[in-house]
Image (cartoon, rainbow, N blue to C red; front, top):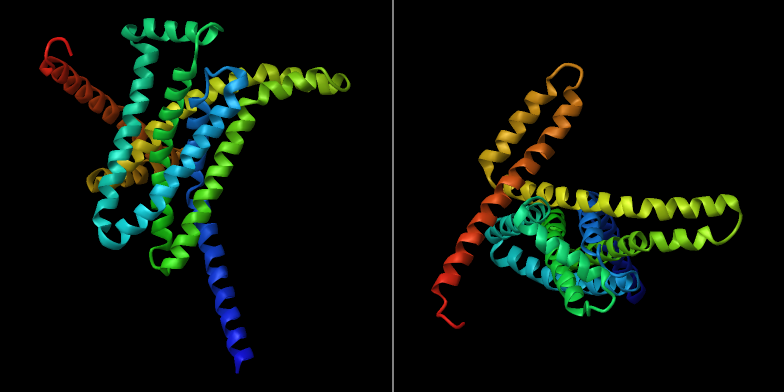
Length: 311
């Protein structure tokens, strides 16, 4: 009797683990796109750090990401259980923040009023006599804030997949996805930022072929980081805009209609149809970010005017 109960329990555990594996696999596939955006954004965030400080900064951001997910997983479970209507508004706030961040990056790059700040920033990074502890902390805080939004989307997508599962299965799947995504993203970011060091090492070792590969990596590293910076900014608009358009039914239906129309174009229809939602999300993300940046600027000016003189 006891043996039968033991084997029945073992069978139940095996079934639960099998269900967890299946749901984890589905969640990993659905969050793969966010993983790519997360990788690009976080590799971009550590640019401008001195070489010897790159890995400590990546490690600090990675720990911040784990803390984010340690907050988000229980919060998502509680919201799903007691206030599921809050999920979409919270995600849209996060999407608006991502668009705002992307617009700020464009402003710093293209608006004349930010040119002086950018040049001073470059000088500060290049000057070995300047203490960059505060700069590093600001970089880390910015990266962790951005990670929070992307982590929230990952957790929300995973929650949607396991919504009908038992509480234990939800906790296990969401925890596995949170840990796997964090290790995957920041492991790859660490590899990317040290790519030039690997190239330098190879260029001084082995035969001519190995040295040529090393020199190629050294040459490619700056281009890769610049490319990731561009991709990271685009990803902010793509992810942020996508969250916003998905949360506004009228826009979501408009995108579906445009995608259907574009797919009917002769010859290039399939490609154009696949690109249409992404392009729409990026454009909407840029517009939304610009609106948020203008509103933030207005509120900031009003707040400064209301402050008493001497404060």
